[in-house]
Amino acid sequence: MSRDDVIRKVRDEQVEFIDFRFCDLPGQIQHFSIPAAELTEDGFVDGYGFDGSSIRGFKHIHESDMVLIPDPSTAVLDPFRDRKTLILYCFVHDPFTDQPYSRDPRLIAKRAEEYLLSTGIADTSYWGPELEFYIFDSARFAQDQRSSMHEIDSVAGAWNSGIEEGGTNLAHKPGYKAGYFPVPPTDHFQDLRSEMAAMLAQVGIQVEVQHHEVGTAGQAEIDIRYQTLLRQADNVTLYKYVTKSVAWKAGKTVTFMPKPIFGDNGSGMHTHQSLWKGGKPLFYSETGYAGISDLARWYIGGLLAHAPALMALAAPTTNSYRRLVPGFEAPVNLVYSQRNRSAAIRIPIINPKPAARRLEFRCPDPMANPYLVFPAMLLAGLDGIERRLEPPAPIDKDLYELAAEEAAGIATVPGSLEEALRAFENDHDFLFKGDVFTKDVVDAWVDYKWEHEVNVMRLRPHPYEFQLYYDK
Image (cartoon, rainbow, N blue to C red; front, side):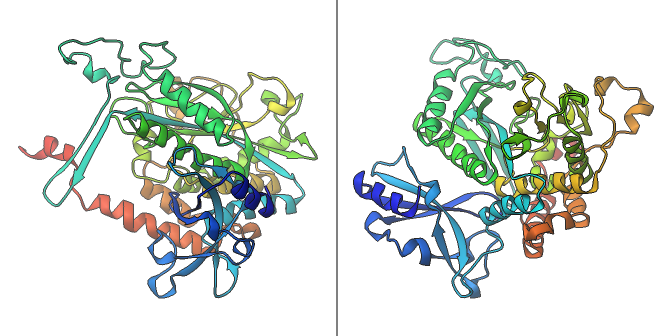
């Protein structure tokens, strides 16, 4: 849509409110709304003001004024509001310099696409994230100086197989790590996921498949069709909004936490990616390993070389590393393979067509900010292409059955957010190409993660420590 198309749509469909959306640095979508009559042609140029000092990772209080410039191509009707509301994603600008704000995550995604085009290597990148999440009936948590608790519950949770539910128990609850692909009634949430898929289609996101994932208690996956980088980053944030809103209306709650349940599968965001030029796929070769080209192999080399640093953006929470534990089928090994799902990078070969040749980076999780992690992966891959980085030889054996000497030679992802941040601090220059990322973005990300996540966790006793140590 153009600016004029949006204004016409607002008038013709009698839209009452415009909901402006933008992303803070950690990755949460923020918004405010205006009456539709306040949306003008000039507003698409001059923007709409807000207080940036209250947004995580943005301005200080003495430089708080910022403006949102609506992006008309993102216009979509909000299917959840009582009053007809049009959503517009925005870019953030500094009103005093009239320049785009360097810490605006959508700007970073836009610049990544511009940089790709400038390299001459490719003109388009396609992204296909697979977001996993849990559906719960209840999620209670609290924390203060003397106490800590959390409790999640689900009618489909394996832990509820022995309780009385109104004097009975209808069973059909997936066991731990036993939730993959059962039909209803064991799959409790077929209809709920179908409603989510239908609502995603209503806001313009094409769904390819939806199913129960491995975990008990309604772990779910809804895969969406590949898209270009900025558009897919928008789609990921809209995907979260839709799935959470559908669940909320049904009396359920959705979480994208990587590891909400001990002893069961975590939730990842396996990210498929490919490069194209002139409408032709660049990752395909008839003679290459798993059908991939030299270009794709060098791209993989860049991803693996920068993987420890990338994890600060791809697995950006302390909880992320409860999922990425060696020996538990997690994609922690920094190798690539055409079939091995414990490898960091997999080459899907189910579809033999050249257009389907892509790579799947399996380390990210849904807590990643897509506007940052997609550009970071792209820049790492392009660095590999520019330097013709050869990755380690592919491994198609069971990585958990390797001899000790062979396993010792395989690098793994960092074991904690602290390790990932240190790797990021030591390896981030590749992000500066094309001014996609700037130093203040990198510094703000690192400072925020240390101050608001790593250090606050360090200061608090863990509840399980009482079981380990209280009586010692």
